[in-house]
Amino acid sequence: MTAVHHIPAQPADFTFDPNTVALLVIDMQRDFLLPGGFGESLGNDVTLLRTVIEPLAALLAAARAAGLPVIHTREGHLPDLSDCPPAKLARGNPSQRIGDPGRFGRILIRGEYGHDIIDELAPRDDEVVIDKPGKGAFYATELADVLARTGIRSLLVTGVTTEVCVHTTVREANDRGYECLVVSDCVGSYFPDFQRAGLAMITAQGGIFGWVADSAAVLDALTSAVSPAPAQ
Ligand code: C5J
Image (cartoon, rainbow, N blue to C red):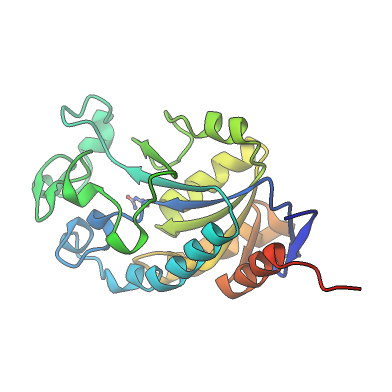
C-alpha cells in the first residue's frame, strides 16, 4: 500500500496514509451490547447499539485484509475496584453499580464474561486490547505509547457509545494531534438524539473534532488502498 488516500466525508474529504492509520474499536463489550446485560438492565434498548455489529464486522474484516493495525478497547475495572474513582462508583442505581453481580458476571469488572468483547468482533491474538478505567481511551492507559511506537497518526474510530466513550476518546485524540474519522454506522448510542448530535458535534465548525463518513465510503477507500494500480 502506498501514498495518500481520500475518503469522501463530512465536512471535507478525509486524507490518510495506509501506513499510518489504525482502526480503533471502542468498548464493543457484552455488558453494553447483549440482551439481558448491564446496558439493558439500566432501561436501555440494546437493539440501537446492536445495529453497529454488522457494518463494524465488515469494516474489521476489511481493515484486517488491508493490513491496518486494529486496536480494541474495553471499559472496566480491577476486581478490587481500586482503579475506580469513588465518584464513578457512586453513580447510578445502587443495585446496578460497577462491581455488582450482573447477568454476565460482576458489572464492568476485568476478567468477567460481560466485560469482554462480543464474539462477532473478537480481537485476534495479534491485535492490541486496551483496558481503560475511564471513558477516554487515552486516560490511564498505554494507548499513546502504542500509537507512538507504531507510527499511527490517524484513527478510524468505531464502537460505543457515540456520545460517551467514542466522543471522549476522539476529543482526547484531537488534543494529542491525531486525526479522527468517526464511522457513522459503526458507532452507536442508546439515544437516537445523542447519536445525531454526537456526530454533528464532530463535524461542526469545519470539523472541530474531525471527520464523519459511513462504512461504505471507508470500505471503498480501504479496498482501493490494497488493490494493485491498473496497468497504464
Ligand atoms: C458508557 C461507553 N456509556 N463505552 N460507556 O458508560 O460509552
